[in-house]
Every structure is written in C-alpha cells, then in structure tokens.
Amino acid sequence: MSHLNTKANIAEPDEFYHDLLAQHEGRSAEESEALNARLVLILANHIGDAGVLREAMDLAANTQGGGEVNRLV
Amino acid sequence: MTKKKTFEVPLYPYVRSPDQDAGKAVRHKVVVVGAGPVGLAAAIELAMQDVEVVVVDDNEKVSWGSRAVCYAKRPLEILDRIGCGDHFVDKGVQWNVGKVFFNERQVYQFDLLPEDGHKRPAFINLQQYYFEEYLVDRVKELQAQGKPIEIRGNNKVVFVDQSGDVATVELETPEGNYFVEADWVIACDGAASPVRSMMGLDFVGRIFEDNFLIADVVMEASFPTERWFWFDPAFNRGQSALLHKQPDNVWRIDLQLGPDVDREEEKKPENVIPRLKAMLGEDVHFELEWVSIYTFQCRRMEQFRKGRVIFAGDSAHQVSPFGARGANSGLQDTDNLIWKLKLVMDGKAPMSLLETYDEERIFAADENILNSSRTTDFITPKSSVSRVFRDAVLDLSKAAEFARPLVNSGRLSVPATYDGSSLNGDDCAGMPVRSRPGSPAADAPTVNGWLLDQMGNKFQLLAINTEVPDTVEVGGVTICALSVNATDEVADRYLGDKSSAVYLMRPDQHVAARWESYTEANVAQALNRAIGIFEQEGAQ
Image (cartoon, rainbow over all chains, first blue to last red; front, top):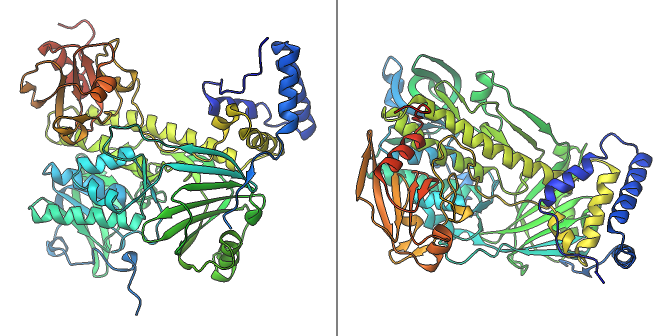
C-alpha cells in the first residue's frame, strides 16, 4: 500500500508556484475558488488511491496554524 | 563628543584637479562615474591592469547608512581577485542559519551550510559604508604603488556626449564646471543613474507598490547571528519583517509598511521607535543609526552599452533587495567587463567582445530579476488568492517537507553560469556539470593553497593530473599554466569520471572550455572563441 509523499517532489518549486498563481490572474474570488476546487478534483483523480487521498485530507485538515511559538521577546 | 560614523567623514574630499586649469578637455583612458561598490571595484581592476582611470563622484563620502549589507561568496572571491578580500571577511559577520516565522510560529529553518573546502563563507553581513571604505583603502594602496587611479570627490557629471572613439563628460565642482574626455565611460551611478537619464536611455520593468522601512539600530542584544524573517508577525500585522546582524552591534531591521504610506511621517523617530519596541521589547536599549524607507522596481536597460558608455550595477539593472542580488550582481558585472575592455583597448580582441558583456550580464540580470520578482510576489501577495496560497504553504511547511522549498523569503544571490554564451568552447562528457563551460570556478584546497587564490586576472590552463606547456601564446594573448594534483575536492569539482583534465579559465575565473588532455589546436581555438574571434563554419 502506498503512502502520501510529503517529501519535496517538484523539481522547480518557484516556477511551479509562479505558474499556479498565474492561473488565477484576472479572476474574481469566486472564480479562483472554483478553479482551486476543480484543480483539487483533477489531482485527486490522478492519485486515485483512497488511502493516499485520506492521508492528504488529514494533513490539510490538521496543519492550519502548525508550528511552535518562538518569540523574539 | 561622540565619534563620527564612518559615513559622516569625507573620505575623498574635493581637491582641485590640474584638469580644471588645462584650458582644454584632458583626455583619459577611462572615467568611472560613481564611487560606490561597483564603480570602485571596476576602477581597482582597471588600475591593477595599468589602465589609467579617474573615478568621479557627486559627493565626497561613502554610502550614507548601511544600505547593501549582505555579500555572497562569489563577490568575496572577486574581492580576493582584486587584492582585498581579507579586510571584508575579517570585519564582516558570518551567518549560515535562517529562520522563517509565520505569525509567532517558526515554520522553517534553513542552513546555507557551505560545502567544505572553500576559502570564503556563503555570506557575510557588512555595512556598505565599510565596504566602500575598504575599497577606497585598496585604491590608496594602488596609488602608493604608482598605479594610475584617482578619485575626484564633489565632481558631479552634468553632461555626457560621444562621437567616434571619444566620450566627453562635463563635471560640476564647487569651483565651477570643466570638461574631460575619455576613451571609455563606465557609469556605475546607481538605479537613478543621471548618466542614463542624460543619454535618454530607457529603463523599463515592473514597479512594486509596497513601502519598506529600514532601521539600523545599535544595541547589545543576545539574539543569535541568524537571519530571522517573519510573515505576518503580531508586531507588524499583515506585513513582513526581517532581522539581521551587522558588525559593531548594528542590527538591520526591515519592516514592510504596505502601499500608500506617508513616507516622511513614517521616518520620524517618534513613529519608528514604537514599531521597534513592539518588535524588540520595551526594555531593550537601542540607538537609531539610520532610518530609510524604500520602494523598488525590477527592471533593466535594454542594452548595457551605448557606444563608449558602459553601464554596470544598479544603473543597468535594478532588483528588489530580497536575495541580496543588487551589489552582489554589480560586482559580477565588473568582473565580466574589465578583462574584456582591457583586451579591446589593447587591440587584442575585436570590439565585438564587448557585445558579450551584454549577452552574459543581461542573462544574469534576467535571472536576478526573475528570482527577486518571485520572492516579492511571495512576500507581498497581490491578490487574496495569492495570499491564501502563500499562507497555505506556510501552514504546511512545518509538517510537510515538500512545502519548504516553496517558502520564498529570498533566493540568495548565486553567480550566474553563462550557459549558451557565445564565448563558451568545448565541453567534455563525464566531467562535473557544476564546472561546465560558462560556470564560475569552484574553489578547492590544493597543496599550494586555495585554488582560487592561484587563479584569475589572466587566461590560464588549469591542468589537473596532466602536463601542459608553461605558457601558450595565441595571437597577442598569453595563457599561463596552473598545474595542480587532484585533492579529493579538486577531483570532485573538476574531474568527475576522468583521471585528468585541462580547463581553459578566463581572467574572471569562469570556465571557457575543458578537455581530458592538452592539444595546442583545441586550446588555440577555444582561446580565440573566448575573446570573441569566431571562425567561420567550415573555414580552414
């Protein structure tokens, strides 16, 4: 059974990020949200494996505001 | 009485030049406009090659305030090549660790972990005023050796013209205006380049609206010598912040303010100090050394040379400060330019060699502009969806390794490899990709000391585990041998699968061509190519 790969897997991260945001240029907030939803569904279908998708959903659900507090003062 | 700061003391005060009483325009070989890091480095390198040079600057002091503070490894190697690297590295603060915070949580930490076996560290922090002062020291050292270099303070360029092989420059001084002529003018007069404006040359690109407040504070603080970067911290909500250490207990604080601020109002101490206290704590005692507000643009000139006038550094290209790609890339401009100019001035290379300054340094400028624009887009999201993605990356980056390479608080300056340059010659399969033609030489220890300390300022044949002649003459150019036995690092960085190698190195320590062994014909062909003499295809 395969697992979700959370190791870096994108060869050119800055280029990917730029291309991703370029898709949103000129779109309204609703259009962007809809685009993101379509993109998630497309990528989910590509992955297919229910276990991997479940792991991905759990990771996304549990990472908001992650990390230790580390203050200068 | 408090001691004056370095940047308050006139370092090259105005002195009347005999040129002003000559009754006609005196002809010089090279006039460099601007005594900043780039102009001084250019002039030093020219003088070291015995090319007569006059540097003119519109004031008589070094940089006001710290300004450019991060200097990368490659520029430090260039300073070594022009004879003064130790001074900078001895004074500078070395750092490797960077931490990234989102709100109050650390989400990511990087270690620049310089590879072992290099003389110079990945980065040092040093105030620009020290940087310029040490270059002026080097100028004085060269003057003491009788080298033809002078700096004229309070000599402001007010007019530039050129016709044929001469440029005419009008200089304004406290005692009136005068003219000089020059074979070449190198304009290193900054992003607002008056020379560029006087010549009516364009400078187009992207304008960014955000304002950033720089405050340099002097304080005794126990913060670590690391680069700390915050996205959306409580003390600067909705914006970013940066903390970085400089020598003499000076700390650089950079606070994003957003668009539409009253800059004069924001710069007042009564507005700056509360912002700093929110960040540093109420109890920390600090003194403001310098405050400035900047905005930036990412843009470049279409061409860096117009006839006899050549632009280098910020006058030719401007980037955002994220990534320290301004002064660092400016030094690499002069690194690329001066050996070419010297060969052209000596009649040993065709004028067309200078076109490859444009070719190679525009390639580098575009790389720097691309990187610094992308960082800016990450730091200052331009739409709600780009902020959503930015925050998603930051939220994920603690738990998921894949998100960390997407965090972009600055892609720190690395030298350009001139892939595809018309000066590049033969490559050799099986040798390391990092040392392919066009790349800057990687340093390595050898039995005779650091490799880069033995390299530069002339064409050389780097011979590893093989024999080459002591000197090879091609046209008017002498190539000198640099023979080394392979240490582990040399083998790793230069041999790869091969047991021997011959590298033709350019005077700027970039690789021109490489082979497994020496043949006179290959070296001659590659040398000609490296100085811009291209043979016709199929010609015998």
